[in-house]
Length: 162
Image 1 (cartoon, rainbow, N blue to C red):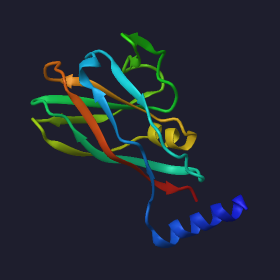
Image 2: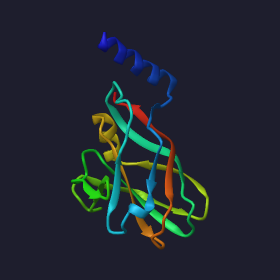
Image 3: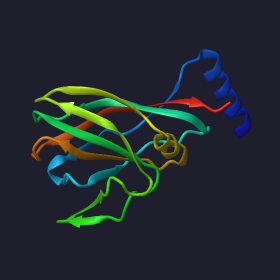
Image 4: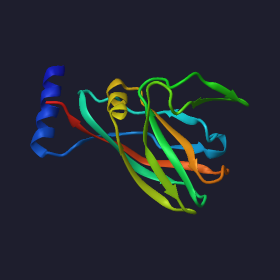
């Protein structure tokens, strides 16, 4: 039965030439918790696709209501580091050069702007394929300030392996 399901999904994707999509849950990051020398990682929630994927591009929208701030974005396909206790919270604050951590790119913000983003990297692909994807954020430029970074309408667009 699984063979037929995979075959049917592969044929449909090939015939329509439309990429498959894996939706990820919206989430928020409290930027005040992100030191400039570390990346704050959040494990993503999604349904693992039934087929192996050859390439993933993560897209969505970011909102951050502080001006003149540049944030860097990262991905990992395994737990990126040991958790750190900050007050009552357990956070994953990791070295950006740690093993298994990939830089996806940067986004600059001006007050209240919503930024569309699209990132692609092999860590995103392997994270979606394994069912374990971690996304991280780091302050790259500007003054450390308070505020919430909102990730909305996250989707991993995918292509099926031949």
